[in-house]
Image 1: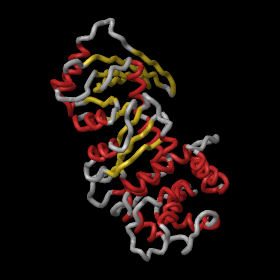
Image 2: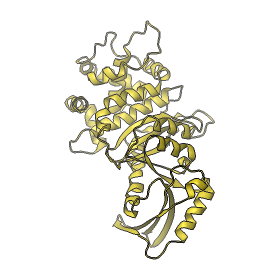
Image 3: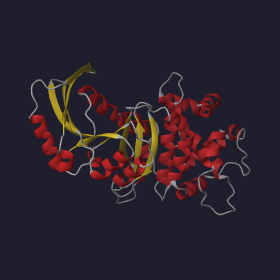
Image 4: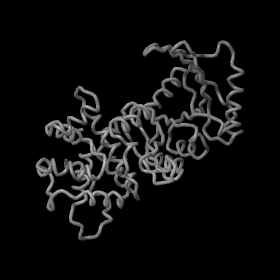
Length: 365
């Protein structure tokens, strides 16, 4: 547990000098509570009281367990960037396992329960950088009131991207984003849609001119009552980077996906802007890896941590507790024992020995 307390020491404490509860200890209790299923500040306080004997093994708890109002006040005040950076220190050795060619997916997720009366469901968001192979959140930032693009640029500025491939949806297919990735030595594969209409038009023209002998990759999968077929191609975008003032553009990717289910066939064609010329097989694998941020992060946050139902709304509270959920997911995934993620989270709440093994595993990483 010392690894967490040491990292939390770097978080500025915005409270008055006479605050009763140690900030690091409060954050440890909150994080462990979220790891074990707490979804609110009231849940953190209740979990802390239920597990006070466990916490006293490694925390001083001079003034016992904080009240739920104390948790709420602290999370409204502290800087979510500093909290996320502290967890980055804890998980640094895991992040160091990134390899050349690994996919880092960038995407935003709405904190639907955090909206106030009359606000859009996307008023409060978190943008994350997710290492697809490691299934690890590398960094996250709050993006309120439509600031998803700026938050993504902030996240990219924190990452060492040399030799990595950044993937993102069409919102991020723009000059600012590619310039940020280029500056940090990364490659990129960005969804290309109508928000870059002239670039998309040229991409369509390039694929319309390919010969029958052009390299193509195909993948067929059958299961769950459906059959899916994906076809991929890559073409050069020679000269178009200068023409469109789109720095680093080297090629375009094309993937056509068809699905047969219940006697019906549907199809979809997607285009991508690329900073390098991968084989069609690598393009297909890269695009597929991007969806880890939806399936392994966003979906799990809602199913296992009930993020969409979370009602934290005020000030920095939604962002800070969202950081706790993402990092709790990272820590839970570090455990290599058998069992589903949901069962591990429940077991951590029931079994002190198992909870200790997960937390001690981070210290040993």
